[in-house]
Length: 147
Image: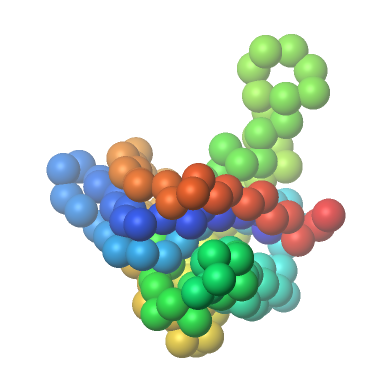
């Protein structure tokens, strides 16, 4: 699985003029299931993200996790993270999991985060979503379970 993780002061996702998820301080996680991914990759990614120390401690160092600060996660499915841009000008997405698998693993990933004690808000898989965020830092981390 792939994820783009952004430390945010706030974030929200809207589908058809309806806010489907919003958080205050925490992490916006754009997530993509890749071909061949299983629940094991989702569990690994959720565990890493829950422990990722990218929030400042009292000394101003990135030394605290989203759990440490009492933050939340806004998880948004984004198959375009699978983009292959090596050839031509039009990205290919054949490395993304099929939609059924992607939806299942996205839901499983969100449940895994919840199981780790994190409040989780979500977008809507496969929908045209509008994402708003106030990136804090900015801090943006790329994570790939296959790398």
